[in-house]
Image 1 (cartoon, helix red, strand yellow):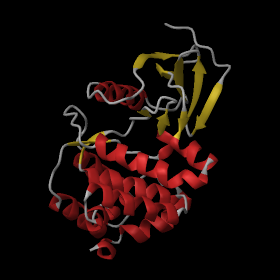
Image 2: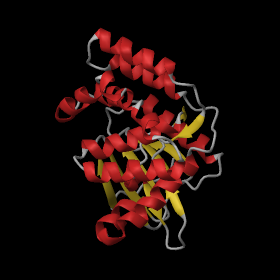
Image 3: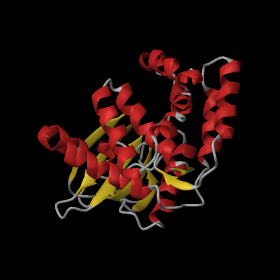
Image 4: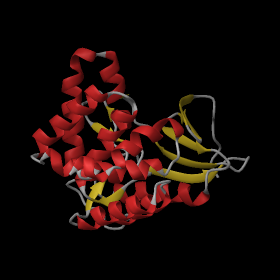
Length: 253
């Protein structure tokens, strides 16, 4: 087992902390984080590595002396697109275009060993705290959408994309990766902006994504009630009102 140096914290997330130790990064999960979820995240990332996309390589999965699970990856030097947007608002559109083009390229890949997105969404709908009739409508909608098997990141946001000095883009955090419909991945990104109350950026993103991909806006809107239901399964109180308003299927017909 490798010895870990936890002196340099570079990020703190819910249920985890991220440290840098030289040329490697350690993502340390809280003791209540399930072993199954940790190993599944590492496996997802290892599988996505086979596509040839620029992502940090998995180096090790281990445990601390206190029994916390650790995923060790290579360290990628650079700034996230979110940092760059925040530092240079005047260049936001340039970075947004870079971000959207990368997402479109990611979804052109296939990774056939990943969980199927429709299966994951079906399970999330069942876990959501909504009435049975709405669950039925959402399942019916999901079944009515053509099945696809493209690589979907599942949490594609600018803070998960690093731009190196040489211009290379690297994509982080493949915990939610699935194979399915790119429109769902786009709907998820749009929803994330809306949950942050950044509706201006949400609309900028959606307009640019549809323009660059050639996908009609309505194709992404069809997924919004489904991704909202999926997110509601997390039971975050401050998100519930907005998510319930989106789960109403008829609003997006």
